[in-house]
Length: 311
Picture 1 (cartoon, one colour):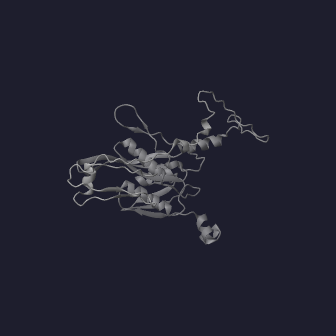
Picture 2: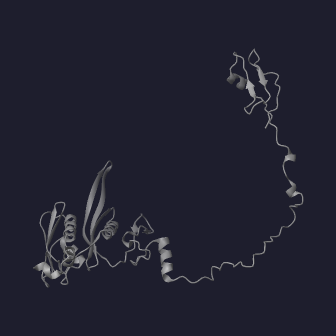
Picture 3: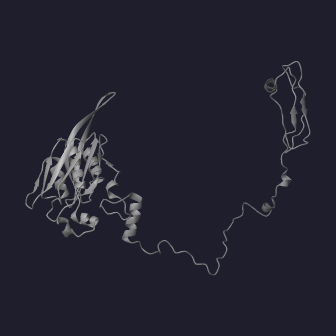
């Protein structure tokens, strides 16, 4: 684009000396405009005093635009779609309804991909069903109580303790409920969980979900007892576990008894040696159980048959 020379008569209305404005012809690729202002008037005063500085930029000519495409085109005419004919070897894709029907596994996998694992405890995609549910249904009415559907995964829940705890904050004290729950299938799998909430029901639900995330396997013999004795401690609590003969039953108290019963142990001896804290004793029982090993595991590690373990 070229800059056309403009002659301005009066460049200053407020100053006594008229500044000199000169336009040069474009000789190089740089901008050809050079502006010289007298020392008595600054550049800012020049711009503020002259509000009508006109720069005319030459526009493109209409003859330079190619409009031959619209010579034979009438916008009022109707235009019909005429697609090209497909080649001879063209095979159209099958319709959506003509495809094979999906199997039940494919439907379950697609449903699980969208909404997560189902409550049945079976995951088609191999996901963990114990940490799945974060969706809650709110009860209509006053308040914002939250109700969750019970997970049907074969685990039974049993509450050990519900206590009211307080937290001192800047504005006073906050009251919450802490629940300790043990879940187990009574076939060798058990877990201990704890949760806090402003309501007892919500605290029990949170602790049950936490217990399902900490499932362990209890080693047992065919007489539903421990393979050997063990001891475990957690915090200030210490628990002693001993195997027992058939018909003895579970001789233990407090949280130790509940954990053993939910695991499916029918003959065992247990004793709380130190602290009487329910949560610490339940976790100490889990620690003692994790120290146990089956005789077959020890024989496999040592590379000898099981009969030689007692020699």
